[in-house]
Length: 218
Image (cartoon, rainbow, N blue to C red; front, side, top):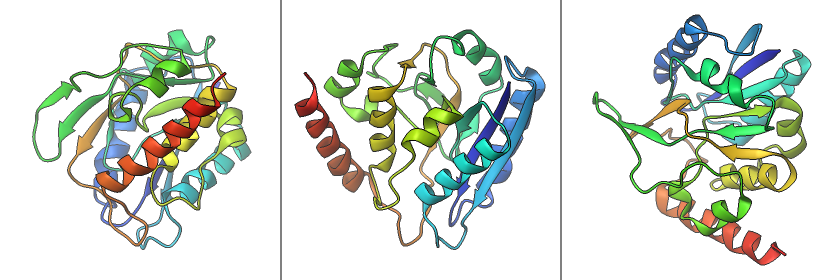
């Protein structure tokens, strides 16, 4: 199998991407897991002309065109952990998309810790809908390329498009959050640009998405 790592690189993140790419290469050198080949796909947008959703969608298209079976989405200011591909191997046959535990670092420090109070392992959409979204899912995840292509990101949304995409996957495909760590979320250095958003706006958008998703449940 072949995996692509797709990373939108927006304004103020071009220098962060150096460490990000090094972490991907280090993970591959540690062990490729179930994969025989890797495509590293930085999706450049340092002037903010396209937006992260459009660039992620372009990355999906490129991954499919290159014959990739899986995609790992990684933000430019985050880091892949060295055992990511190896730990993913045991989940590859059971699911179509896999998230790990939320592990975070404050940008510019050496501290790394699990997010306290987060939702543990689950494969139930109801658990995702019933939990505060800051404690459930983040961008760093493995997804089958065809599943990502079937859902894609909403380019009309400036924030909350990540959770709309997550919910689309969880409704239609076999998804799980597992008790492994695949990446480190580095907090405190968000991208800027005309389509950036703060945490408050993200919270409002995502809680509205979750409310509507709960109403649609049987």
